[in-house]
Each structure stands twice: as structure tokens, then as C-alpha cells.
Image 1 (tube, rainbow, N blue to C red):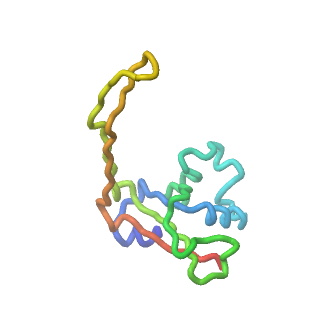
Image 2 (cartoon, one colour):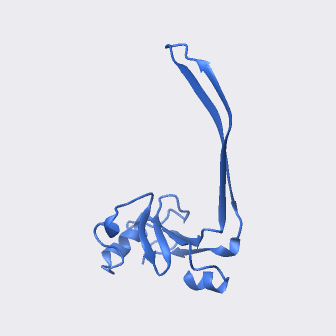
Image 3 (cartoon, rainbow, N blue to C red):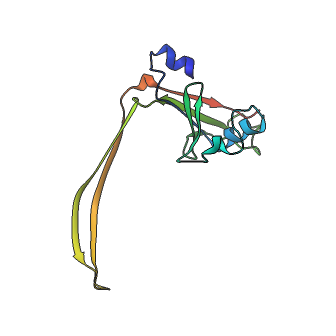
Length: 139
């Protein structure tokens, strides 16, 4: 994935890699010394499990797409179940958010006031060449 991003002239600073828990478990089982027992001494923070792996910040997520039913140890021999790994650069996507409207009103069940607001958000891929995906199959 690093080679794919290098070929697209993507900067090496700010790269990230997102793996699913099944792939993380495979890496831990292999005793590859990529992950130590305490995730680098800082613990699991917002999905970050490794700060630098060949220039990538490595994150764990349960929200990655999958093909078929996704990777699992029970269905590892199925030829249609694949997991997906996503890598990219921080400049590849943008997120915007704002609180658009707020209003207060009297709570009918107590002596308090209630404040509610409308939260607007959006995301967009700005540089598709700075994102790379791959499928893996547990064999």
C-alpha cells in the first residue's frame, strides 16, 4: 500500500492505515513484533494501535467494508469472504461540521430549560489518488 501511494506521489507524512480486528488478531498471533502487549505503552486511544509502522499510523475499526460475510475464522475456507484494508493520507478526505440552529424551551416535566440544536456534517473525498484499498482472505 505504501508503494501504491508512492506511485501516486502522495506525501509520506500523514499517512494512515485502518485494519479490522480479525486482521489485527492475525498480526498478533504471528508474533511479528509489530504489536507489543500494551500497544506501545499508551493503550488503545481512538482506535490508534500503532503510531508508526513504515510511515503509517495504524488504526483499528469495526466499520470497514467487507466482501461476502467478511473475514472470520469459522468461514476462513470460503472463497467469497474477504476483509478490506484501507490506507490513505490526511489530505485525501475532508470533514466539515457546524451547529446550525439552536433553540431553548421550557421543560414541561421540571423547572429546567432544554436547549436543542441542529448538527450538520459532511464528508468528501478530495484526492482519490491518496487512498488505497486491498482485500485479504484468511487461508
